[in-house]
Length: 383
Ligand code: FEO
Image (cartoon, rainbow, N blue to C red; front, side, top):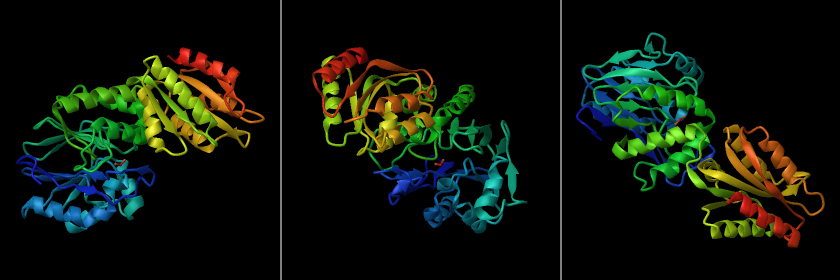
């Protein structure tokens, strides 16, 4: 599929995948993007997932119009982009791989060869001259793997951004960019905010008019400006929106009643509220909401002298991803020895600049006059 005279899209839409990375639900699939830059020399930009290797090689052959590729530029070695490298190297025996030093040992580990004699190692600032297109490499370690590089082509002012600025969803999915880009970011890249900030700083020195990520659409114009703004917010752990996420679990419905009552009170005070039942929702949605809003209330039951397992999992996801700078309210339920607030407080203890908003609401089995009054006070404090 031609994009411009020089740049041809050869990526694929994956509508078959059940779980991306074996973990994330992707109701609208996902795209593995790949491009061919046609110039005096020809560069193919990244490979695709193993299940699409043959289709991708065919796309590349069609795009080449009988010419041969000189380079395969590998920005990232996660197999959703790298699995078809060996197939490509067999199909195009004169091609050379261009990638970072850390990528080649990964190739050896995945394919049993690091393509000795057919490789160019690039580091920060190195250039690959294709003709009028010149790729300048920008290292992006831990965004979100150690070997990642991005490349900038000053000819058409384009950044090839690896997973950065990517989203879930096939390219033919009609959906909001931010919604699925946010879920992707906080699920997969969110732990590495400092490293994303470092790349944004380097990118700010470039005149970027187009971003071509490895997943999701090409970003230009207002969409590009908005994506850069959101990446700055997300990677600096600032809240994107004012509002409260109420994340709860409930065994027989009593904790849910308290969570819903709190939501009604907050909405009556004009506060935006998002609710997630952690036993039933997509956890990646709950995680993106936690990072999106400036406040959160956690409501859960005591279970095995601990907390209900989905809440433990949720708090683990948040702390692993550097959850911080937020106000958090707690609601615990327990029929004989409530422990949940103590456990949640301890799990949040490792999160920087998290303020627990008092009072902690203590429910014994079901809301009563005393706990309902605590809920009223918490609603005031959260609003
Ligand atoms: Fe899209 Fe980190 O692979």
